[in-house]
Length: 428
Image 1 (cartoon, rainbow, N blue to C red):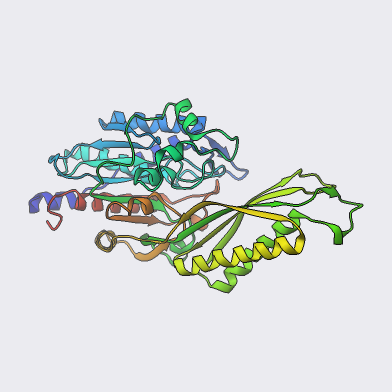
Image 2 (cartoon, rainbow, N blue to C red):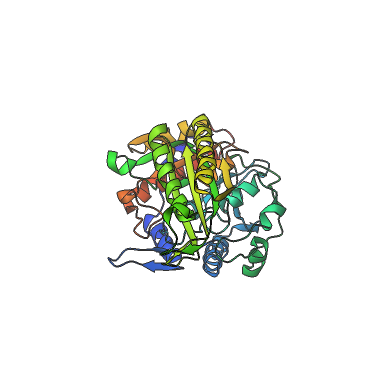
């Protein structure tokens, strides 16, 4: 890449209204409207809404002349050829599935910004040396099929595809492989991937309040904290709510409440980097005048320090044993997901930071509190993430929002990072 070309490319910018239009159009699929004009999405993985969203994004990929392939877990990878086919591609992307009450930016921004970069390069007549790939991965949220980051986990070889295809949905018991076939996204391409990308970069909203609170435009993500998801099943004894003395009860609902408060106390004890959440509680038979027979709940523990995270897991396990004994109930656990903390490639992190500064943006190095496909791709190639602010720190909420000016900043940082990575001589 000669100096003249380098100067021209350094001035290249995306078309922000076009990117925003795509975000809004995809957001109409599975749209949820709130009482105050806010709106978001419900596109759980491998549902009819997910299929419609996939169809729209794949149509855009074809419109841009990209070569689209679908692998056996339903990941979609679209490729724009580079001038040197011997070089490994640069990949960008994220996911387009959402939680049941999600926003229209989470995941979608990273995928659609990738398509916007492709269109920007095409309009400018720029052909990069390395191919550029735009990907969206299956079931990143893990809301319907656990674990989260499922598609990217299989893509990098962290979970056998055969095992993933046999997973069962939390909402309706459907088998994942059958759902892929039903929606038409059981692809012919094997996974894990045969050849790793040269690098992977994911643009994402922060999903937290830090950037907005500190007036920072670009979050330079250094890594992703470790994640531990546990399903806990408590079996007690169903009984009449009025006639059963308190001393004779074996109440799984009480135990669920005790676990919930214990998780909160645990986070206070282990310090500010430890977070914990009881996100789902299912009570059976769920009747007002019946002591429950069984409760199923989930505990989500996260920390940037795996040693502390393991300590939290151990303390919780001990608490469950003690609780079962004191209350006369049976408690069993099932690990839904367990990922160690990930540190991103130092040179990639430096590149994101330097690019953002060159474009005139304020920056902050920070960890990600949420899980992302990037933490899986980090197993096979140099990886980095770019964060943009979230208004009021909201995400997994239909009021999730990121200002246009911040989307513009994040997408242009992504564009310039991609251009920097796409040359065989990255020092040029």
